[in-house]
Amino acid sequence: MAKRRVKSDQKGDERDDLYDLIQSMSKAERRHFTIYFKGTAHGDLSRYLELFSTLAAMDTYSRETLEKKFDGWTGWKYYSKTKGYLIDCIFDALRAYHKSQSIKEILYDQASALRMLYNRGLLDHYGHLLRQAKSLCYECGEYLPLLDILQTEETYAMRSVLDADAVHDEISRVLILIREEEAALVCNRKVYAIYKKYGLRAPESVHQELRRMIADIEKQLSIAPTTSSKKHYYSSLALCYHCLNEHRNATQVLQSCIEMNDAMSVREFRERAELYLLHMSQLMTYAFNHRDPDYFDEIKAYVDKRVVDVSGLEEKRFEISIQSNFLSMIIHKDYSRVDENARYVDENMELFKKISLIIQGDITFNMSLGFLQNRNLDKALEWLLRAFELPGITGRDHMMVYARFYELLLHWKLNHTELVLSKTLAFKRYLQKNEALGEFERVCIRFMNAAILNDSTKGFAKALQNFGSDLQQLDSSQYAGIVRNYNELVEFFKAGT
Image 1: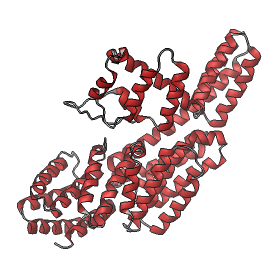
Image 2 (image 1 turned 90 degrees about the vertical axis):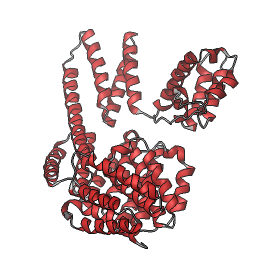
Image 3 (image 1 turned 135 degrees about the vertical axis):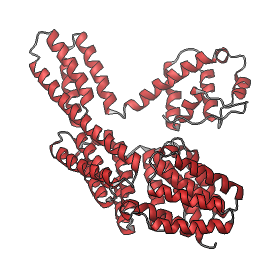
Image 4 (image 1 turned 120 degrees about the vertical axis):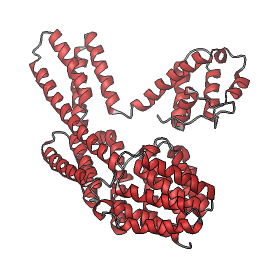
C-alpha cells in the first residue's frame, strides 16, 4: 500500500505508521474495518474506533491534537501497544475484505482446509475439495497454490500407503510449468532493465541486442506452455519494439496479448484483470509514441470499449481515463481542456496518489506542458514542480534531463534572473555526474556554458538558437525523438524573444 507523507504541526517531521496505514485505505476498506472490528474485538471498542476515525479524518498527523482528545485514556498512555493492536486488526480486516477478490488466496485457504479435513478423517469431504481445488488451479493457471495442494496430496497418499506415483508425476509437470513462467518473467525483467536504462534512445549496440532478444522471444512464444508465460513473452516483445521506436509493431503485439483474455473463463479473467488494465495503459503509450493522431484515436476507441468490461479496480480505470485525456490532448495539440483536466486530477487526488508513479509523473509533467501551450507560465511551473516532488521521479533519468531543461527555460521566460544562473549551474553538474555522457548531453552542456557566459536576456536567446542548430546535427537514427521533443520546446520559448 502506498504511504502518504505525514506533516506535523510540531517541530520537525513526524511519522506515524498507524496514521499512514489508515490514510492509505479506501472509504470502502475503512467501512469494512469498522464492521469487522465490532464483530471480532472484545471489550470497550468505542475509544479504539474513535482513535481510528480521528486519524482517518486528519489531513496531517498531529500528535498534539491526539493528546488533547485522548488524554486520560489508558490506550493513549500505552499508545505504542494500542497502535500495534490496531495495525494487526486492520491487516486482519484487509485480508478478509480482499480475500474474496483473489482466487490465489482462496486456493491457499483450500490447501489449508484439505489438511484439516484429512487430519479429522473426513476423507469424502477431503476428496471432493481436492478435486475442486485442483480444477480451479488449472482453470485459472495458478500453479504455485497447486503445488501446495499437490504436496498435501502427496503427503497423505504416502501416509495412507497409497500409490503416490501419479501425484509425483503431476508435481514434476507443475514444477516445469512454474519454471517456464519464471523464465518468461526473467525475460521480461531483462527487457525492462534495458528500457529503464536507455528509454527510447538506446545506442546501436543495444538495438542489435534487442533484435536478438526479439528472435529468441518469438521462438519461446511458439512453445510457451501456459497462458501466463505467453503473456509475459508478448509483453516483453512489445517493449522491445517500443525501445526500437517501432511503436506500431509494439502496439500490435500487445493487442495480441490483450486478446488472449477473450478465451479466459470469467474467474480467470477476474484474477488477471489488473494486468489486463496495465496492458491497456501500455497500449495507449505505444500508440501515442507512433505520433499518428488517427491511429491513436483508433487505439483509444479499442481501449475504451474494453475497459468498460472490467468491474472494480477503480484506481487502474482512473489511471487509464486520465492518461487517455492527456495523451489525446497532446497528440491533437488541443489544449483547450487543460484547465478541466487539471481540475479532474485535483478532485480525484486520493485516487491519483494510488496510481502508477510512472503515470503520475507523465500526467503531472504533461499537465505542465499543457499550461505552457496556453501561455500560463505560472501554472506550467507549478505543475512542473509537482512532478519534481513525486517519489522516485529522479530515477527516470531521461525525463529528468528534459524536465530540468524545461524548468530552466521557464525561469528564463518568467525573468527569474538569479534562478536561471543557479539552475543552469545545477543542471550542468547533474549532467556531468552522468557516467555515460552522449552527444545529446554534450550539446546541452555547450548550451549551458554559452548561457552562463552570456549572462543576459539576449545572450541566453542566442545560446538557445545555437542549441537548436546543434540539435539538428545529432544522429537522427538515435536521437530523432529527442530532437523533435526538444526542438518543439526551443521553438516555443524562442517565439517573441
